Length: 354
Image 1: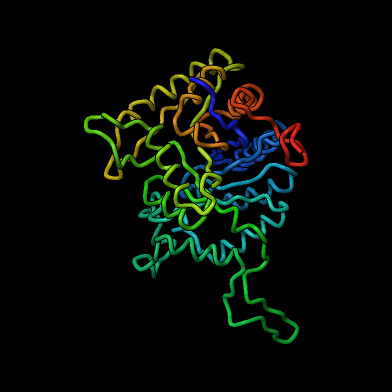
Image 2 (image 1 turned 180 degrees about the vertical axis):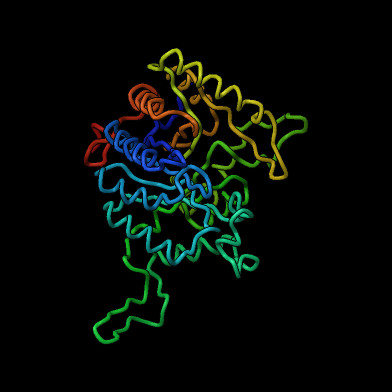
């Protein structure tokens, strides 16, 4: 299979930021060290998952605020923050603050609808209103309005020595244009395109079209169609930004023990990739484990990868810190170059680009 016509332009990675319930500080520090390593290796972006009532990062905005003070170039994203658990007004303040602290490096990503596990905490989150909360895409439109600086009051005012703005402060120009939407199905990717957002497509999609008994359930083909539908509806057309988030585990410098664990991890997850699951017809992509040459060959033949210029490869949730160091180093130094990617320099350009 020949390489895609478009070389990989931006290389990122995604982490859940696991930690020990009884010693959470060490896990959060490891996440910050992984982000620093990503910058040193030339990665363009790092993305944090958002977890509630689990032992993964529950406040990516806070972690990214800390990371902004330990890095200078790498961009930050959330993939994704479920807006059903957020107040758009307050979240806009936090996001704008991190964007200001980072010098405009924030790329927040969101999902709408009922958050995962919502029934566990909805009454703690909205004790008096959970039955009436609007969890639809309207919530994201409210957030976008705040990030764009649209007024929330009748106008600026002065009360004694106190000055008040009519829109969310701080205002971070350009942040609204860097919002991403996590789309898994046809309706969601088309909505993202209609509203001019950037698209995050991951290793989980909705298989809404395909054959019976497993026929036609080709993850790559369905995901590629989602990307095309998104761009067909987006004002920028073929230039609309899409980031793909597959699980990719190169083994070039892995120890034999690491390679065995990685293979066992992928094998245990393989059955869920054979057909759509549950009422939502969720289809999972197989994890890609092997040498960088083997993974590059698989990606060059992947219909959806051939549609994108940006990726945020997902780190497995249950590995050790040393595993993440090895995986990220192999991705940046071996796999990335085989995909046509060049590491970023301090001025934000790929080496040799001006």
